[in-house]
Image (cartoon, rainbow, N blue to C red; front, side):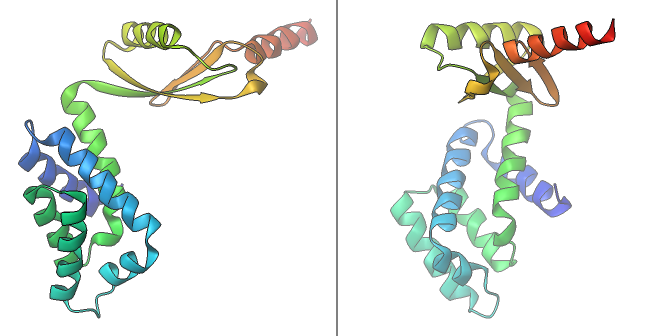
Length: 177
């Protein structure tokens, strides 16, 4: 995380928190997604040789189409003025982390051998909340190579309850004797 991205993310969170913090995150993600899909627009907005007013005009048009609120529009115009739009993804990631910290939320990446139904997902969330003491937002991925069970990553901590891991541990125990 760069110092600049951190400063911009903190400043934006100060402006948006608490009333508009989630809405702001969603709007920044939408704008960032558009830029990643529209490379021509991104190149134009990040090009310091293009007059600032022309770049701000494009931000305004995109903001109108995306129905962005004025604090987000102003923030994006500030990034354009200061030629910092190229670090937008980093700002969004940093902003999300700061917002999660403020809200007491952790993000979990859960990988399962099979698709989890809603009740199984709720059970995993409940267990992770009990382990972390925080509210958990979970992202689920499927990896059949796990054979069964699941692996949950919360921050840098990994909870591995997969059959693949158990078989590996069993194999290691057999070969050590």
